[in-house]
Length: 108
Image (tube, rainbow, N blue to C red):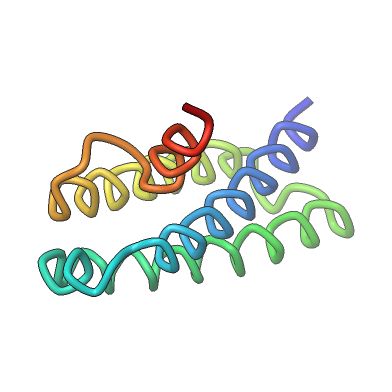
């Protein structure tokens, strides 16, 4: 039961990393300059989460769980990602994801 949860959480890491990289492309130069160092930390954490998600899923798929605490560790990592994302949003002065805001404006 813990292995499927760990694989799912690893997939969330990959999605979080890809969304973070997409958000970096959407930010304007003005937003990026106002949000330093949050924008740089967000970019670094997005890359780290993408790589960690791929590595984690590969490891669990090929070798199983390294420890029974692994799902807990993965969950705490997602908390770090959420905190970094919130810091970036506060720094650029938006209430939510710039990608979602852009999609919302195009739909309406």
